[in-house]
Length: 237
Picture 1 (tube, one colour):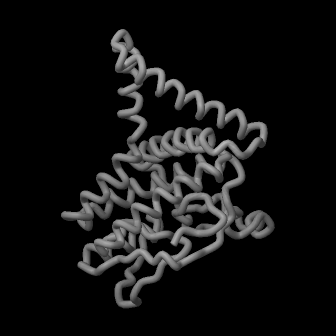
Picture 2 (cartoon, helix red, strand yellow):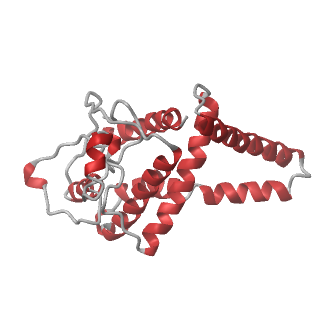
Picture 3 (tube, helix red, strand yellow):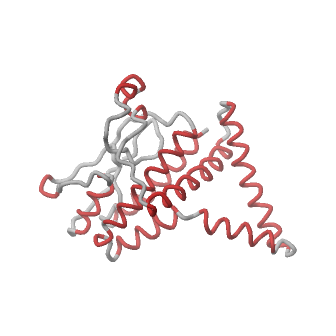
């Protein structure tokens, strides 16, 4: 259920990055597969994600960052909602920290990209909660009654997706997308709070996502970079 919802998220991210690529200004690269000129490489900060840090430096230097549709990588999907929640939380926490520490790199178009592509999405649950509460208080109006009903149907679908995921049932794409939407946005909000309060994620705790369980068991304590891409069987270009 989680990988099914993650696939929809991956397609959405791919669309945004392809549009950014037309402007030569992809905001964040895919940690599993990206390349850059050797002359543009700089020393990395251990507390930041390199697939975010390096593109910000390159963009600030006035260089183009393109999106290659033909690039592919293979990764293991997350195996549970708990792993996916932890992964999304860590990504957003590191993203929040990185965007703040490297805010001098965000100017003009790239500042707008950060606001619209990242920050507003990380905080999506805040306006959604306000809309839900407002709809409850204004439900005497037919328009808001319908709005409340549609919201209730959506969140009920997410809850049903969670129940099916708990039982291992697959194949309900609508429920999977609703479930993943709620899960990912809860994790994003938690990660944003982590980033603002100073929590650091410099250790990749679930290396089994890309390296397999056998190697992961022997490297749980190793320090590394996370792969900033949605759960998938075929990597994001």
